[in-house]
Length: 113
Length: 116
Image (cartoon, rainbow over all chains, first blue to last red):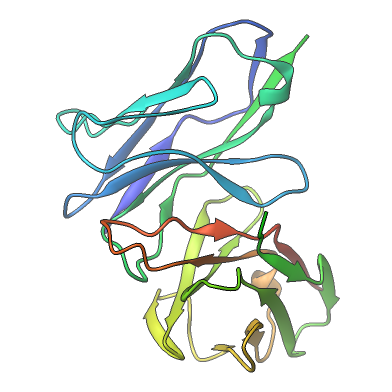
């Protein structure tokens, strides 16, 4: 079945550091890929998405590129802020409609001032 | 901005008791979902619901689980006889029918269920 693997946390960085959170996936078909973020006390929010190979999703300074050849969707940001502290989830979906998402375990990111 | 809401935020119950977790999806959305996250583990898909019936369910969603849309606004998850291993955070989500390759799912803040 489908699966998502992402780097274990917590990841602790200083403000303005460069961020990479690795994500790789296994899927039977051609999935859409997502990064969700969860701030303390809140629900999961879609951060960015990509629906086909070589697509780059971006939002709030975060980027991720759909790499079919390496089955990866790594999340990057050039200069993190304290407000980026949250849990980040990589996820995939094989189709639209009522398809459920397959999530990774989440990576807790801590940004220190 | 419209959002998915869930109640209660924390539910404590005794093993063997029935619990109902409640969700109010975004009003014009057509697809509804439940997920759970056991502490320290992945967020796992349980079930999706469309047009007043279950659309998909995972192997986790066995006979002790049921979902219902009892009126035009609520979407509930019932666990008939809770077990210790049902302790988890339960997330509700909803999406509209975008007609595209995927439907963005909007998540609620979750209900933490503790089974003693």
